[in-house]
Every structure is written in C-alpha cells, then in structure tokens.
Image (cartoon, rainbow, N blue to C red; front, side):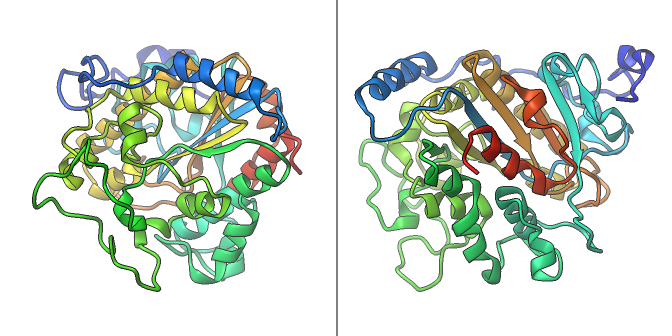
Length: 384
C-alpha cells in the first residue's frame, strides 16, 4: 500500500477514538453464564462426525465468508471516517499498522491482504445492497442485468439467479459441506418458539412473522438468507444461538434479547461470537455469516455509531482469528461503501475486502471487483 511508515506510526493519534470501555458489547467483559459448547468442542465433534460419515466428500481446505454490509475504503480523514478513528487492534496487527482506508489498498502483508473492490460495476449511481449482494454471492454483474443499482432487497427479477448460482449452492453441488451461521427467529417460518428460552410477554415479533402469506418476509429477501434458503442451510434458530452453534447478525445477541424478548439468551462478547463462528467453520468447507450493523451505523451518520460498529467487528474478527484452524481462510467482504463516510450514506468508494489465514495470496490474486469473490472461492474449493 501507499501508507508510509511515518503515517502508520502516528495513526490513529490524529483523532480520539471511542475507547473500549466496559459495558454492552465490550470484548473484555466476561460472558453471562450459559451451557454451550466451546469452539474447540465443536471442532472435536465435527472431526468425529466427519470420520463417521462418507456421504459428503471431505476437502482439505475451509473458508469462512464474513459478509459485512456497507463498508468501503474511504479517505484517511479523522473528521469523516470512523475506520480511521476507531481502535482496531486486530486489523492493525494483520495489516502491519496500516489503517483501513483507500490509500492502504492493495496491501499484502505476511498475514493478510486488504483490497478495495469495485462495487459500481460500470453503472452510474450509488451501489445498493440488493444488486451488490447478488453480485458478491454469485459472481454475476447483477446491477447490469437489472439495469441499475437496486436495494435494499434483492429485486424479484434477480432472485432466480441468486437462488440457482450463489456460492453456497454451487459449492454444495460439488459435494462440499456448506453452512449459514446466522440464527433466524422461528416466527419467520411459523415454527414454535422453544419454551426453554421463552419470550417476554408483549415482546414484538418480526414484521410478517407468524402469518402464512404469499409474500416472503422482508428479513429473508436480503442476499445471504436467500442464498442459504436455496442451499437448505438456513436451519439455525434460538436453541442453536443459546448453545453457541449460531451467530446473531449483530454478533452479541442483544438484538434478540431487546427486540424479540429472548431474555434468557446470554449477551456474549464479540470475541466469543467470533470463536463460535470459527467452531462452525471447522465443521464445513464453506461457511457464510452475514453482519448488517455496519450499514445501519453508516446510515445513522454519526461518528460514535460508526466507531462502535467498527470496533465490534474488529473484536469479532479477533475471536475468529484466535480459534480458527490452520487450514482455514477468512474472507471479509462488503457489497458497497457507507460506514467509511459519516457525511454520505452509500458511497461509490471501493468495497472492503480483507483476507487472512490459509493460502490467502492465491485465493485473492487478481481481485478487482465484488464479482471476483465468488468465483475465487469456488476455484479454491475445486467446485467450478
């Protein structure tokens, strides 16, 4: 990258990042007591299960894709970019001190690669989530097929493409073991809520929940859950989340407790959630996790919200890094910019791509656009 050693030495002293103090979502705070498996226990169970089963081909390489909504590479400006002001020790260590800004990319260190991926895909206007997520998950220029950028949901005319050609389905067809790590509430599928976790009396339920209509609930019209449904792997709900065998999209379970009334669920740290994701990934050749809070924070247009979102993501990735097996590669990729500029909402900045672990150099070689990610994953898994 073009970030100088002098600049790295002083960053982030040019701003006053929000410190990691104790409180909600703090990675240093001990988790609430709950009975659930640790990442190492999940890995051991996976190894035992794999030895017993020959129905799916084993493959000596594992990939986790962490989709982060609305994170681009912006200016190195402490006044406008939360990624400059945030305290990001995990990312800083992976990137040899370079900040997560456009001037740093492309950057290849001994442990990671930072890339800025074109999300505009040759079209005017501001990239949006629906077409961006479809492009990221299939490798097709969804915005060009649709005629413009569109969001936040996947447009109806692109849903067949996403269902049939997304990276989970393609890897599954080649005999790879795939997983979607996100937990979704039972109400979206007209399933009963487990009494062991309960729901607070009068707690709201997701819109469209519990009603059988011809319309798909909005929560399932985003790219990642649509891809997971097509692969038959959107199967993790409240009990899996309580056991640490699923991840809440906002990482720490607070949304499930506050908005869904699942008050018996523990509030876990971002680091613990990351370790849980590494455990899930150890059982599969390809695992997808989707995180949307970064885009929500970007739309808030507030520096403190952006810094908090960036620091939570950093701690979460640290948990994955500390628990992942040696043969695992983690891809952090976004669909468009937003978080990196508190003034703008969605941007035309390059979308974030970060790769670490395993054979990262070969995996991300030649990436230029968000459409390059899915084909590279399938080539790595020999699933093309």
